[in-house]
Length: 65
View 1 (cartoon, rainbow, N blue to C red):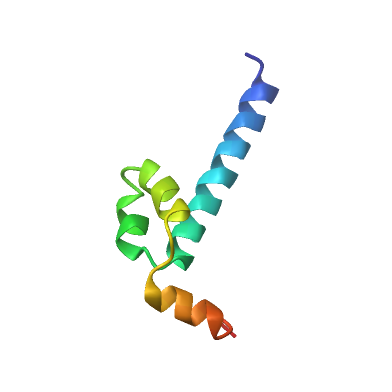
View 2 (cartoon, rainbow, N blue to C red):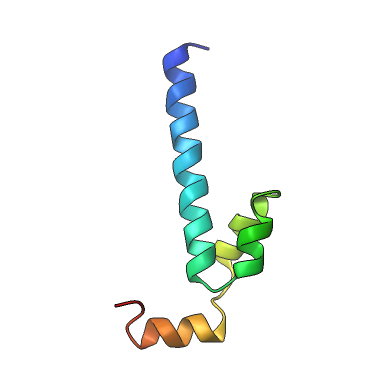
């Protein structure tokens, strides 16, 4: 594969991993966030499952301001 394709794929991977990690954190799954550094598939799980009650209440109240 060409170097250009590797750079594009690596950039896409990093953007997706960062997005999933931040979504996991915002959903209130802090343990999954930290363990996700060793097992990144946990970020996918943390981003897909429902937010914790505390995170949902915070989001309903306006989130971080």
